[in-house]
Image (cartoon, rainbow, N blue to C red):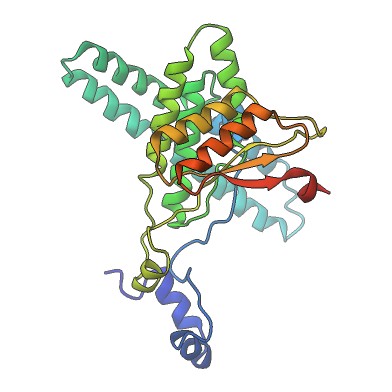
Length: 291
């Protein structure tokens, strides 16, 4: 049924004969004929702060402001309406997980696991439709967005970006209010790290050989400076290093931004992780890159 209908078939059909022949003879290589290429970091913080219901409201306001006297604005309407469909779809996607967790809880005999599943059901019914209010909710909301991006394009290099920056307020609030202990926060983070490694890109034969080990290039950045040039390292930065060292899995691809104000302890912990032999973290000099 899919023959002639997949992205790769359509791309190949549109290529000139000479270009296709050169590609088949490895004069040049296109590794994304049948999928997205990624190389993006989306605005996770917007979803955490507004939820998709909030984002949909913004979109509907944009639609209401469209001046239809300008013919080119018709395209804007199509774009905005497609964006509302995406919002509704992601909410429905998360609700499926909520319903599944609820059903699993009904059949679960272990009391602790039963309560955990019930809590998961509540969280998945809340986010990413609504703003996240706790560290657990923020992690779950982030994961739904990240997962949907992977499903949509079968892409790679879809990266969490400055994870410790947009996640820290939720972690800090829960720790200070006594809603969560550091060890449980670490457990949640460890679960997320394992989920990162569940994502595998469907590749063709050549790409499978070229990208041995099936790397997904999900780059997660720690440390660095803020918009005012001050050190941005926080407790979550350390925790991410710690989790990576414990889990010992190839994803996410960890990167550390270091600079003159970088805490010695953070740099030391990063070097200790490098000694483990995972090939992580990558080190980037903020002063050189920013200047």
